[in-house]
Length: 396
Figure (spheres, rainbow, N blue to C red):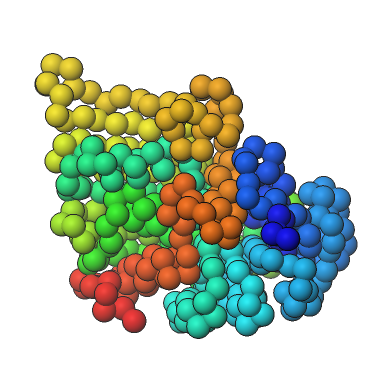
């Protein structure tokens, strides 16, 4: 009898645990699926908080030993949402057990560990996925389609940035996102990873060469943290009286050349006053342009340079029409907009399709794909440290 369900195990909880639980819980309610996800087991280190997490998100089982969860023959997919430094151990265990793995981005807190994860996935010959969820915003997927259709011609300019301001508050304590041993980097891996992946996805081109890398930490020390976050990036964090050193970047930026000849700029910061989650890009080509700002995530702006001059101008496309726009048919009527969480649900849908042997709506990033993005980030760090041009392909 053909299998009709997909038993998911979630390793981790917290902010991303909530986003993923919501996605697996609602995807079957909106999309027609070849396999129905089952919230089988949630795994975390804090049994007390895990019990409350289970009740809120309706996981069938809970556990504190990830190895035991992975070895459970009932589990079909391991979904990893722990902090970056824990990715490698869990992923390698899952691949060794012959389980497909979906892992949060970036692949790891270190380039070497990310490489090891890719090599293990290749050896295990298992399906892998990385949660670059912004690819699954309908407007971003539409931009991907328009570029592929030749609507903007040959790409000449790329401007990509991810601007937040939550870390401006120096009273926010020294959470794991400010610790290089856990996070690896700050805005670089947390935010810049997203815009690099998005540009690669939309343009179909690679970042080939980097210069002008800048890495800056503005708040050098923060109070040590007591407790853990209860909500988003900084909600529920409490500090002690002692201070500790911030060991990651607050802001990064670099210039680049793309593989198709375009020039590009990338910027990521958690210190840009007035920008709460401004993840966006503008891509200019020989026939037109597209631009996107996640703070207006249901809109894509498009410019057609082939029109006669007297009617040229940016047009705003509300990407919510079920008959024409990616994923929109599963959700609401025109202009009944969707939000942040729906990108995760759209990706859960595509993961299920892929595991069922069907074609996803748009290309899904696997470990090898995500490692290309991590190589770009590594090249940028080398560029900033050594103050020279760096060819991405030479970073091994």
